[in-house]
Image 1 (cartoon, helix red, strand yellow):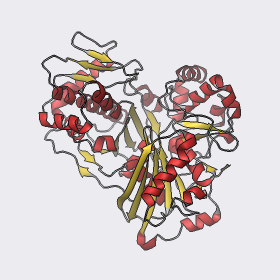
Image 2: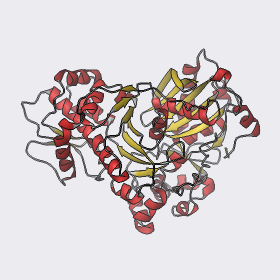
Image 3: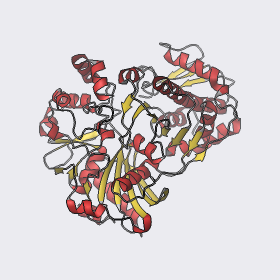
Image 4: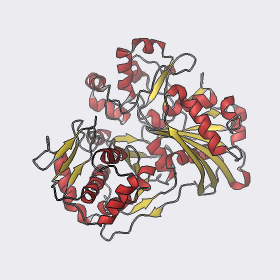
Length: 517
């Protein structure tokens, strides 16, 4: 196993060749919370076409290589070898590696909630506000810095055997190339990586002092590759046997939500992305430098997007597609997702008189509250399943509106900026899209391309490997449902939603609370 910030000279020269006929093929990999996806993308000038996709449940780290080989064989069957490979993944998830690069156990995942005590200790010792100003990240149970402290205290044998740490995307890079590397959008989610100063490039290493707080050294973390470089080149025979070419540039594209936003053209100040999957994220690109502490108090992070040029605010909810899955299991009477969507669409567009607070296991943002749980307020026996199902979608969309509202407040910008929506679970669900178009006071742009994060990883790889032309490629979007006076019918429900969500111990005789975990 090797760490490298620069690829071999021969690979650099190969990567700077003029693209064939102005077009290129690129492969993107997305290691997600639920599934791992691979997309083959054709790029011709600014146009992007997804030619093939394949997915499988995200496996344990020790099985990841075999799963990726199988997925690559599927998308590359009958295709020329791609010109570049990009990797995106969920953030705050990784695995310790031994001296040979082999994983030491299962993933330490972002949603495990195991390291709350360690996060609190770090906050007290280093200062909550000082940590936030340095890293842009709010101390919580999911950040790797806290999880490394937990690992040291609770799995001492694994800790002593750990030669290095790999995030999910970093591990894929290691498997493909033999080189461990990461990027600034993933490093920036660890709470062990400092925000660059305004106008300065992203640091190419984790912070020595922050790592020392949990007993780690910089050499145990991957180098952070600059946003204009690729990490290394394909070497492993298993992957060349799956259709990749030895020497192909490999790029760690970054955090899944950020990569998807970049793929959809959300790159400049004023651009806003809404990423929907198992979890949800809202990312607003800013012209200036927000106050990281004010953002963190609202449960948000201050981040540097994929291109490395601007700052952005990132808000998240762990209960988006997960809430729909819960509803199907507990409230739908055995419906499929398609059945649920048809039921909601058949009811019409009138707002319901039911409020659903869509929090399966706490609320990250705004007004962070780890005790928040899913509640149905105002339900009566006369409410039909269609009304209740629409209320569930309304609750998800009101939560999105709240995150957008708070980001606009923190940035001092308008609350009605156009929102670009992407993600298979959301963009492909007609009921979710339609309700969102009515709830949000903004133009909705929908990216319908399959697997936009994997496709985005492919786009980032092609750009960094210098395989694209002067116009940056992006996935196409279509206008969302046209709604006259979008958001107005939900001004009053939105106010009631925020009041109910922020009222401690909300419950009444007509409400029902369900806790999934």
